[in-house]
Length: 608
Image (tube, rainbow, N blue to C red):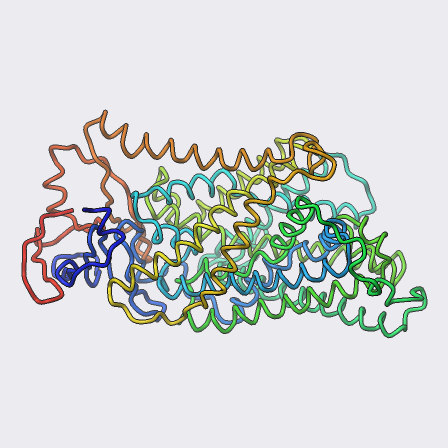
């Protein structure tokens, strides 16, 4: 019966509303829809009430991280993550993989469509849950509430094990050594990478007390608000940098650069050399996705945004539009200035090759190195801000040990636990693997599970629509076109399927010297391991230990932070526990409450 109700539309008598007279947490009501139980709650960010399944982490009526995210920060949170090092490094790789100028430009245009489609998916999901930060953590939790806690556990393992930002830290280290005019050893490169990432984490995780100056003996300590200001400033510099490259491209196309005799040469027979190899096309698309990743970053801070849905709709769209147009113009500038064969071999130095062709070697390249360095640092800051909220939300689901460590914002008013995790995992990934294949493999590893979760997210949107229709809820503040959601689904299916196609040189001719699809197999293995862990944790151990897991809602700090904690309740104490707690784990003030159906009938609730 439970499975039937999960998928079928309930009759009016099956939809029941529980009043808030017995809830000590301030929840408005609980709605029963078959075997699903929805809590109805609002937050202090001016959003509408949300209906979320009770298995999810409770809504924080007051954000413990404040409400410092304004319209400009929404734009630059996305811009800073989207414009990292990708546009300065990947265009040459994408040209090499696609084989032609024409197809490369088409891929960059597809990237805009992908970013728009993904943005629409996230915006509709945010309109259903406008009072929860954490983006995909929340959306997967709510799209797949059964089996209980499976997706939170799977995403928690994914977030903890694969939560690193080593690539940009290594890029920053590389450019710092280039600016110094030295070629580092592997350990020197790694040491500086760890140092710059540590600086980024310190900038994010520290907050000055009211009686302390911003600058003290320990250095510059940045409050959550000031770190967001830094994101805004760096984001503005990035946009100006890409605008400068784009403008330079128009100057080149106008024939006003002496060293470039035929700026239109690459655009004649622009599809000549187009590849048909599936693996090459897949790698090119993965690089495109990497370059546009970040359009969803601001959704990780929804509960820190006043009036989040209209703010995100307007300003998130602006960020995607700005980056998309600048990416296309920058690629046109690259292709106008650098011969195709030379640019295809440029690898990670595409922008540097462009500057050398236009301005010559010397000071201009040094300036570019500094701008790429600044861009990578801005990307680290923006990624840290978004990822810390996601990891904190995983902790609020109650599926990680030491719950309060992940949730508390004490003593600096910032999520120190998630920042500490990011630093530790990134440190290990930078230092532990040797340079070469091992590092490349580890960096590539998150891409396959990420594609699986993105596919689940898009499909989950249809499930959420279906269930909210059961509740007779009105149209959300934003509803994505079905064609956009389906396009997003197809892109995710493509990125999941095509990495299995062997490269042109055979199964050992990929990005690493061993079997080309090893990272795919390991990524799937991680998800399967999550399933094994889930069965053991949720079923086998409770059966052997004579208990069941129940959620309990806790207030962690006085600043509004709260969380779920999963507790072991002995079988002989289940009835009493369920009488004293509601489905969301709130302690009832007055014992079992009366149950009111949507038709006005009164019945007695028998616990969960």
